[in-house]
Length: 339
Ligand code: TRP
Image 1 (cartoon, rainbow, N blue to C red):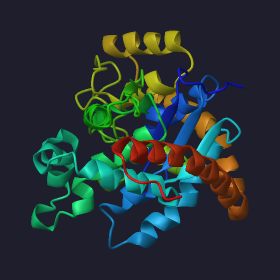
Image 2: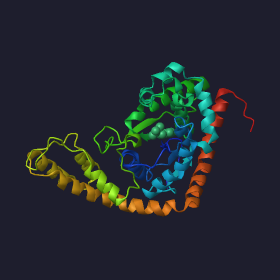
Image 3: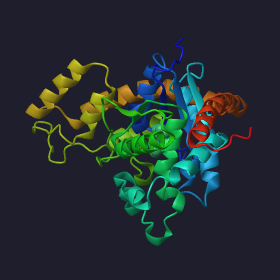
Image 4: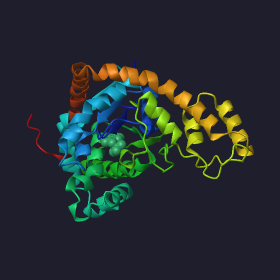
């Protein structure tokens, strides 16, 4: 058991509950969280408020996915005895810190965040951009600082959020003339981003190129069959390309035997190894990985009471923890603390 002290690390990650989690989440962060929970105190935030920033008129979509994400977490072995799983909307300190931070961040600064800029364009918001969406990086800075997290395992698209958080930390601490808030750094996954099964750069539900953690045997089989390889590898005897070949990217990410994968790559490049054979190898490996996750997930989903109970317990602990930061900030700013 690790005892958090002023100098020990504290980890925070989060997910928007917009749908079931997929293999991209598994490679990019879930796997890392399972390892990290052995080493440091870790909080995982189900970011329902952030999920609402682009689903304001569909609150039921976010609400109905909270326990789905909970089931995904537990199914991949995030252990609630080691990791505190909590719900963003249950933690008023996060919303209050967001209000305080909004006053020290300019509109032009939020408009400059490259990830938000890209998302605004991609979602085609134009004049209908929700205010909450534009400022979600400020709310994320509130999340990170409220927990006192110094390590934030995220994908590279989240680096601008970490940078913006540290700017807020710097400004707030100089306003308060004391290091009340902690700086943070991103922990990038060694494997990097998993491409979609169609070969596009990102696995994303809206592109329909994902494989969820709850996928059935047939869904896995279909996804692997449809996977993008090397379009100019027409005959088995032709030399094939590894770069951009999704089957090999996935074999790299999931196969336990690196030497075997290296041999297959060499053989494929030389010619004489067919796509079907590579796909069979990958399918075996994904079926083996996902079968126990799917089974645990089914059991967990059937017992919503237990899932809700774990989330409630975690949120209570997180509430106490984040409330302390809010109080310290209020004091630092000279605001009267009423209770
Ligand atoms: N923005 C993150 C994502 O889309 C989710 C998130 C919300 C988060 N709050 C966080 C991640 C705090 C890390 C820390 O994946």
